[in-house]
Length: 213
Ligand SMILES: NC(=O)c1ccc[n+]([C@@H]2O[C@H](COP(=O)([O-])OP(=O)(O)OC[C@H]3O[C@@H](n4cnc5c(N)ncnc54)[C@H](OP(=O)(O)O)[C@@H]3O)[C@@H](O)[C@H]2O)c1
Image (cartoon, rainbow, N blue to C red; front, side, top):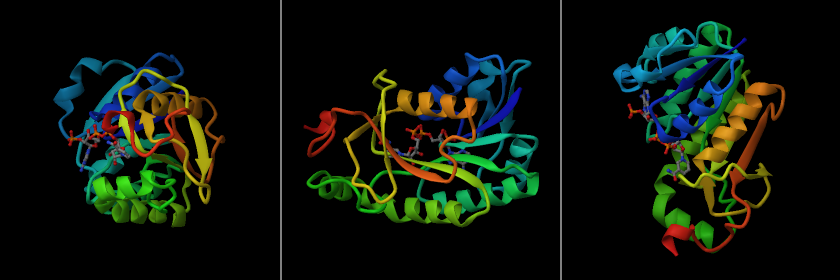
């Protein structure tokens, strides 16, 4: 059995991760969220709910204790603070493997003219997403950072990856493809260790995501 905790479990990307992990019988899930009642329908022998705030290290430690893999879909303008609390809680709990979501664009790595459009639309979130990634990369944790771009609820699980330093490909990332990526990683946690990856759908290149064209 693998013990996996999902931080920000009530979110839309988390839903795609959780459904894929629930489909497997070798995973024990802990769902960490601010209002546990929102996911009470998922509680079972194999699924524990922990109510807590990711700004609070003690709350996080309750969720992270005994976990093999910590998956975070947390975001927000205080993501750097939350990330530092997650790192502290993981170290206190002796957990090593972190998969965390950041955002494409933090290195100005999107191709033009998409980069300029994205910066105009959501550029204010780039600095905090960058700081959060820097904290993770400087930590002793075994991490995988994912940099999606404009999230969609399209069902496709097909994705392409770009490495740090490469020009980004695509303008959209389906939450389902992040769910697939994480489920595959839980199968083989050594895969993508210490990698910081762009993740997006092939065939979505352009000046902006389809919904904004
Ligand atoms: N939307 C995009 O196009 C886009 C693009 C690139 C990257 N991203 C990143 O991708 C991540 C996942 O996206 P998403 O659409 O799945 O987001 P989402 O549905 O908003 O999920 C994020 C979850 O984080 C939880 N959370 C926030 N602060 C918390 C705290 N202090 N303690 C506990 N939980 C907390 C929220 O819980 P509550 O319900 O309690 O607030 C929410 O359920 C985002 O966080 C964002 O940074 C998004």
